[in-house]
Each structure stands twice: as structure tokens, then as C-alpha cells.
Image 1 (tube, rainbow, N blue to C red):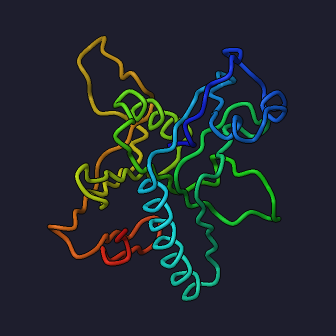
Image 2: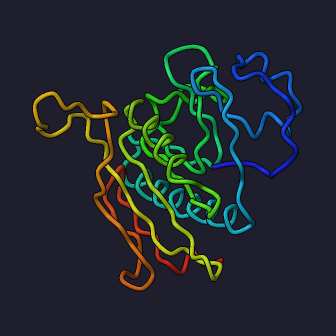
Image 3: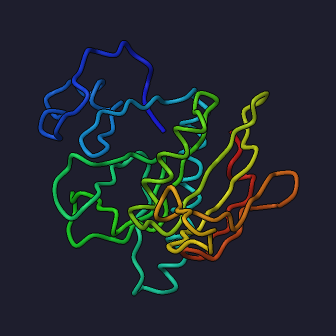
Length: 217
């Protein structure tokens, strides 16, 4: 969730992608557009970047291993890559810390939400629960099947817990007249800590096994 903390310039509340492109890279790189609304995002300390890269490395290794066994499958794993919502336009996007998407027909194409299988966020102490909930809701609304949260230890440079969520497209039975705040939501389907499990193990969106030794700072 983010970029280096710098002085925020005075910008309008709403912008287009074309207007965003006119800003200096160090400014534009700290902004997401939520239906054209300017949303500032901050990068955490060095640990945030390191654990993002370690998760990327583990997921990439697992994806490659499975693709070598099944050449008909093709995935790409990236860090801090924009995901654009809708079938066209670029003024509605978010930038997860890491993601997995289907291979695209040609290089240098924009990543659209329909092609994304998994998004993940490395949570820093500066992230508020409101920030987390709102961004997670956007991923769910876009129909992205899997969402991961990576919580860091506060007293040492280490991962405290990884949680995996699956998209629930329909909600359960509610009392008469009660409606969910969000049309789609994620359900917790797995969590792993270095104290309780030797590795992160899950079969979706492809078989994933990442030992904690690969995730050490």
C-alpha cells in the first residue's frame, strides 16, 4: 500500500489519468484514482519493501513450477503494478503490493481486474483499518478471486501472519430489510504464522508452498 512520504502538493480532489501523467513521477507514484478521486498512498519502512519482494519471489517460484508441469497455464507475478477497473479507461485504478494475473496477449499491456487472480497487501503500522477495508472492498467489487494480507511484527523485522481470503460473491441470509454494505466480500480461508506452520501452503490460484525461511528479512 504505497510510496515514500513527501510533501503533498495542492491537487484537485478529482483527476483523470491524463492529468495524473502530467505530474512528476515522485508525485504520481503516490496516487491511486478511485473513480477519478485522488487517493494518496504511503509506502512503509524498508521492511515493507523487503517483505513485498520476498512474497513476490515465493509466488513467482511457485507459479513457474506449476507452469513447467502444465504448459497450458500461464501466470505473471508482479509488485506494485496498477490494476485498472473496467474494460477501458485508466482513471479508476489501485496499486497492490503484489499480484498474480493471467498472461496477457502482448507485452506492455495494462493489467485489467478481469485478468487478476490474486492481490496482496503488506500492512504497515501506518495503515488504518478504514484504509484496509476500503481497498479490500474495491478488490472484491472487481471480482478478484483471492486477496492476501501480510501483517508485520512491530518489535522486529519479520512477518507476523499471512492471511488468505476467498471472494464470496453472494451473501448469506440477512434479517428482513437489512442489506450488506458491499455487494461482494472476502471470507478468511487460511492463515499462517512462523510459530504455528513451517510454510504457507494453499492450492489456489495454483499450488503454493512458501517456507518461512524464504521470507526472512
